[in-house]
Length: 239
Image 1 (cartoon, rainbow, N blue to C red):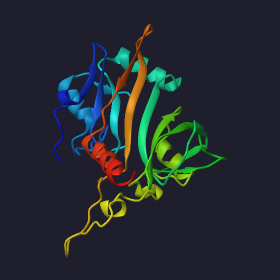
Image 2 (spheres, rainbow, N blue to C red):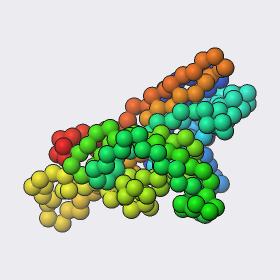
Image 3 (cartoon, rainbow, N blue to C red):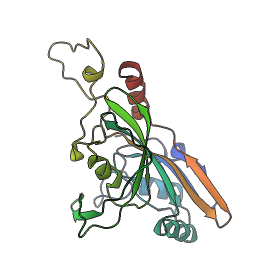
Image 4 (tube, rainbow, N blue to C red):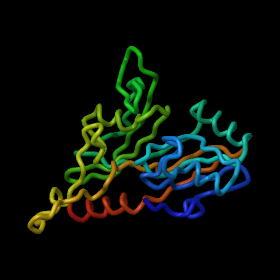
């Protein structure tokens, strides 16, 4: 898969940090030895001392912070540890759901091999706030604000509300097909219909953190093409 040049992904840069708009299907870090292209490798080609401060799932797009030196890495990491980084995600979820500042605080247990489960006994504290932004006939655009940073946190918290992210098959989310939302949609004979989006609809929309003790910045990551196309189609055929 061909990804844009690293410089084209940059949303903000100063002497200490870079914030990029991570494309979908690009891993944050090395998944396997000598494996495919990943964001860390691209960042190191751009800046030798680059270190990634947090991760996004491979399919998730959006704002990701990279430190340019060890001091900046420590500073940003401390903010994550103290839950001082504010993260805002947007997700398209199955069904119409009215979330008015809903807090989900179900503990998450990492069971290994990329799997997590909700466990009140053994799970680690996990909190996410949800707010519905736009309603369609079959879907809802939702703002998700995770306080903690557990693996798959937003995805599994939404799934507990029977509001799985569209296309997130791991958590029972259905892919979006045009035939479901567009009336009188006909495929040619022997044609197989492909989903509107080839991944689950989750985007890290905004991140707020301090670049020094006195300066807080907020960086907003525009939607990638596939997410924007999905919303345009929902607006046109499903509103």
